[in-house]
Image (cartoon, rainbow, N blue to C red; front, side, top):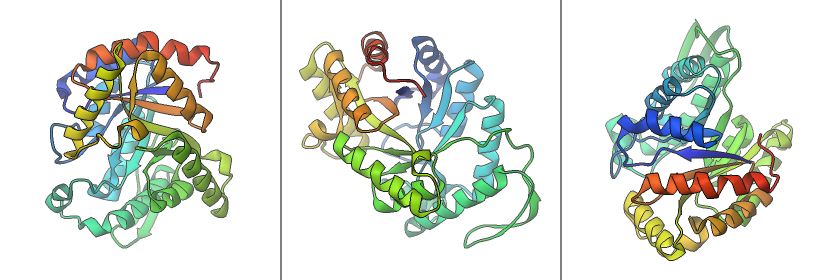
Length: 307
């Protein structure tokens, strides 16, 4: 199982290089940044944040979790992806979502909220064609490209992870994704959704097994399990501006190191080959250090292979 560390929302973006280095040294497989234009609190831009992380590290993978693709012109997104994949020497992976949790950011960039799904689908098609190299002509609903070539393009197209929870996101992952990355799902819900994505991939003429499974988990780990739960509920409730008390036991990852390892094993058994540890607590540093010291080794000892 690959394990990634999410840069904590609300943390000082100037700390990205240092946190990325800590993640690399601690043995995480990849480092993540998320994004919004506007949200309920401070949050990074994934492309800029991961560029800073790329310059500060040498080996660790880099994943945008998630890029809100419809807020970008498709050709500009392709340029950013190609550049980041190149400067990171092939370590970048693109995570894609449609957003929608905070409608004012769509208004601010002139994108109607109702168009975000169609814009995302079209942008994924544009990215696929531009990143393949060569001259491209494309006339879509939102994008027009007349005989242009994106230069340079990386030697290998960055893997695309599609996030979400709904059927439309599953169809998107089945058509364009190398990976399916849902959030706020139980292990059983994850397994069911991955099965649906792979069935849809087969209907699209793809090999179902080519779509890998990953899960994004708002998490905290503490020697005191009750305190870990309180921290997780408080942090995620503040992040989304809604009360998560009733959802915590199903959707959040929290508890002592032993309990967190057990829960991660359930996701692994459900088909998750990658997992994102997204700190949801006031003391990010302590949670990251405890996870690295007492959870990561246990995951490796279970014999779940790294991919």
